Amino acid sequence: MKRYVLDASALLAFFQDEPGAEKVQELLTRAGQAERPLLMSVVNWGEVIYVVWQRRGEEAARERMRAMARYPLEIVGADAETTLLAATLKARHKLPYVDCFAAACEYLFSDRGVRRESLSWNHGWGVPLNG
Image (tube, rainbow, N blue to C red):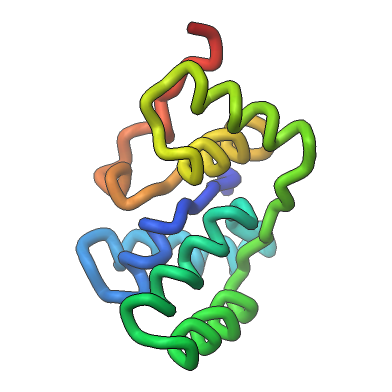
């Protein structure tokens, strides 16, 4: 199984049963079966928490944290290398900074990025690192 990186929008689509939720469920199931967790930047993980908190309250956000802990999902820290790459992407491209962390994780650790907009299964972020 390929190694995938989820961004916040993909996991939020899954939680809210929005378009693309079935594909995220499929990826979570396959990741669990293969014992190869999906990846998510700690910055994107935090984005899921604050979005749920703003929309549905603190208890809902805490429940989502507990749910995420049960999924085959590995949270990738924002170390110096990842953060520098995210900053480089932000400086060179018109991407939200938080999305740059998902793209950086994809570049450093995986085969494919998954965000809500890519749930049609175009390959990853498609962001060149040079220029």
